View 1 (cartoon, rainbow, N blue to C red):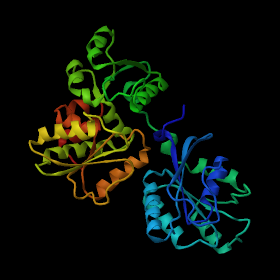
View 2 (cartoon, rainbow, N blue to C red):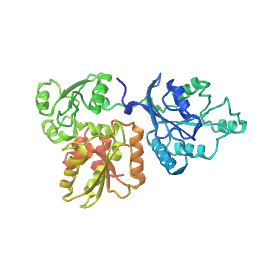
View 3 (cartoon, rainbow, N blue to C red):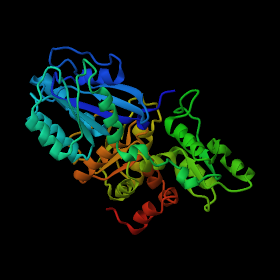
View 4 (cartoon, rainbow, N blue to C red):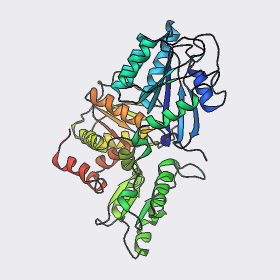
Length: 409
C-alpha cells in the first residue's frame, strides 16, 4: 500500500516556463509524468507524482507552472504555483545560464524566507553555454547546484544524490505520534467509535498511523469502541500508559477513564505531530474571548461531502454557539484554498491535517501568527468547549503549563 501524502517528503519544482521543469520530473521518476513541449506554459495546474526515492523513502514531486507566465490566465497559474510553497519541504529551482535573473531571485527569496532548503538545477547544459561568472557567484554562496541535461539524462544521478543530502533532517528523524508517551513494553488503549462518519470497512488515517507508530516502537495497543472502554480497563492487570479517543467521544471516554490514567484525543496528538501544539493550545484559549457575531473560520484539509452531523459544519459550530451563548458567523473552507484576508476572523479552527505534510500545516499556522489571529484545531476546540481541556492536555506538560498560567503567547 502506498504511503499517505502526510508521510511523504514534498519536493516542489519551480522555475520559468520552458526551462525543463517537466523534463526534470520525468527524468527523476523515469516516467512520462508531465507533458513536455517546446511551447511555453505547457504545465498549467501543479502535477503531483508520488514515488519511493531510496534510501530517503516516500516522496511527492510537485511540478508547477512557470512563474513568468503572462495574461489573466497566467496570473492564476502563478497563484497556484505560489500555493505550492505552503507544502514544499524541499525545493528544486530549474533554470539555465541564459535565463538566470529576476524570477530566479524571487523564487530563492521565497524559499529562504520560508526556510525551505533548495537545490539549483542548471538545465539544458547541452544547448546553453556555461556562464563562468554566475557559476562562481553561486559557488561563493555555497548554494547546492547541479548541472543537467534532462533530455539526455546528464547529471540526474548527481541531482538524486543532492536531494538525499539536502532533505531536511526533521523529515528523516520525524518524531512519533504517541509512542514516546507510551514507551516500549507499555500499553495504550485507542477508543475508535464506529458511527456514520467511520469509513466502511476501514479505519481513518490518524487511527491507522497511531497503531503503526505504537507497533514500530514495541508498544502494546488495544483498540475498542467507546462503550467497551470501561470493560477493557477492568480486564487489564496493569493500567495503560495512555488512552486516546476520537474527539467526538471525549465526554464519555473521560467519564469512563480513571483520572490517574492520561487521556487525550487523536486530534490533539496531531496538533503536535502535524503542527504546533503550544500555538494551538493558546489559540483554543481565545474561545473565551468570543462574542456573539464574531467571525470564525473552520478549515478542513480534505474535500469530502459532509454528512448530516458533520464535525466541521455542524457539531463544532453547535458546541461553540452553546459555549459563547450566541450565534457566531462561521465560514467553512476545504482543500488547499485559504483566504488571503484572514485578519477578519477572531479564530481559525483547523482539522488535524492528517492528509497533509507538516510543512503545509505549519505554513497556515505562520500565516495566522502574522495576521495575529488565534489558530487551533478540532480536538482542542471540542475539549475546551466541553470543559475537559486540562484533562486532554495531561500527557503534555509544556502545553498544560501554557493553559494553567494563562500564557496565550
